[in-house]
Length: 382
Image (cartoon, rainbow, N blue to C red; front, side, top):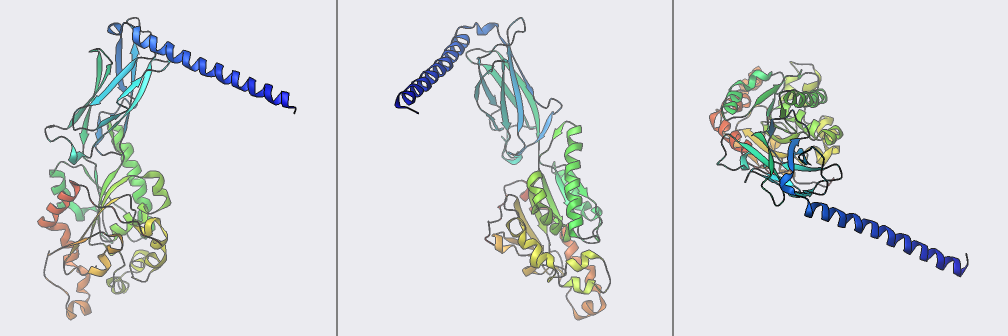
């Protein structure tokens, strides 16, 4: 290519770019004049949810709600380039962006981001938020009202138990204003099986809540014993990255490193789960260490409680020190570790291990944990 051709090509590119910038500038000027000189007092604005069936949302920041504002004139014509201001009730979350201009279709879209329920304005009772869209420079506005509720609580039971084991705790937590639901699964079929059941259960619960007009994105889990391992297996899996549906996990007497009592249990039970609970099982040796963050998802708030003199879970097995999570120990009964109980097999009855599910001090602590931010597990290096 000759020098002249190169020069002509550069000139052509510069002219084309200049024309494009002039066109963009013209559109901006045109938009400014439309917005600035239109008689805004003759305009109407309409705000609505994208998902219009929703009237209630679980209040936590990941559960975002999307809204659309439409501006029309008195004849119903859609008006572009009109500036709109958005706000939510004070202390009840934020609207992003706070200002937007209608597009060529007379529409603009924003996102409402709620606070955690326990951080909402204490003056609001019942808790609800009013989201307002106003045409800038006028008193013309439209509102949407949403009820705000806590994240639902899901109970996950342990080995050879059922959801009934949580009856007393369920009643207590429900009395505090939480919606409580329980997963029932066959705990003898292995921890991986339980994790899949948990995944499907949470997905179904989202749909069930939505059918009632309640938008739920994440759940708070309260897990006991093997149920905690089920929750860890699911939340540290690759499937969880897609679902991202757990806000908190509260572990109650969970054998995070296995239980020596499982070796005794193998004399009585022959199922898959009892073998997995033995401390040197591959679950603890190789499976958990090779999942997300070594088996404890660092994007999920975590609490860890243990009963003193627990017959199933030792202090060492319950510990999550590796991730910087403190273990809180509660006295729920007397020490039942005796030679007679070990030799007779009575130790398997585990009154303290189950007693953590029927203790008022523990109940109050769980309620506190649901009602505040918990620590996130530290990121570990493999």
